[in-house]
Image (cartoon, rainbow, N blue to C red; front, side):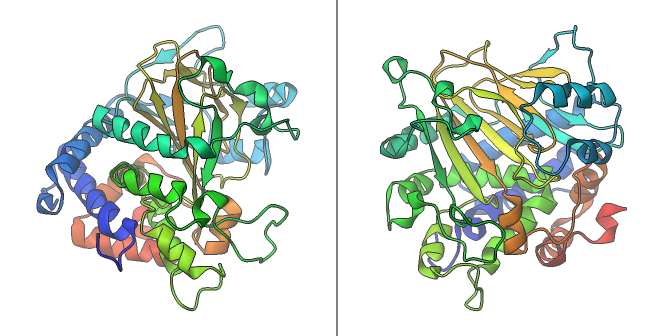
Length: 403
């Protein structure tokens, strides 16, 4: 990697170009425009697997709810938790799931979840991560074991409740969570204009957090590449915001040296990554996210477990959650959770905090991902995609992609 380039520029951009070029040819029969020469054979293999799964998710019939996500977002409020049964029952009565409650629907094939207007609420991509990539991440995660912590007691939220973590006596991996975040507000600060800082796990030069990110650069780049085609507005808007923070005139952080160091190993356009070990996830909504932004969840189990499922009750479906599965989901809008399991596993949760994104200037305007935007993005050849990318990074999509 060239010293002056961030991981986003040096690795992820090439993968994004490759994925878009191959998918536009595979799905819509446009000419190939991918630069295979810039990627190693190993990366090409990982990319081809991702292409196959995304293509299958697109060609399979979507799961469709008979309501508009904009109306749904208006009904759930600005900071929904998804944990109040009475509230959720009332919401479900107005916005019924795609399948009735008495029908147990469990899906295992790649697909997407749409509203009636064609907005894409989630992409379900089982097996998109190769066994080799999974092994790389599991090996690298050992570096983080000293940083994994289980909260001593709950502060009133489920995330800090120790009861959701498995007993360490019965675990292969130490239970706990560590947040890897280049920039966020420190505790006690909201959207108050205070400088953003890195999480404690990334402040140490060549510390465990940085070492982990360095060892999973290819994995991050695949994640970034996937996001660049399933939600280009979010990916390239976030990419531009992060890169602008490196400019000398930027004032979002006081520790520019720390940020420059982190960005050399930060390979996605998300604002943060939580590495979660041996934890059950109750049904919830991620109230700190933007309505239109995806979270991206990666399950890495010690073996494929057919009993492990991710549940979307508002959609009326459960997905098999085998190792190597990616679920990209509107985490604030769509209530979701993961069932209890005795299988040892990590979850890598990539997220975009709305207030941090606003501070970085990464949300120029809202574009809800849709079938139409997906098709129009892939209809562009590489030069036009580059032009669109630059516009997205500066001010959001041009009208031709939204019409």
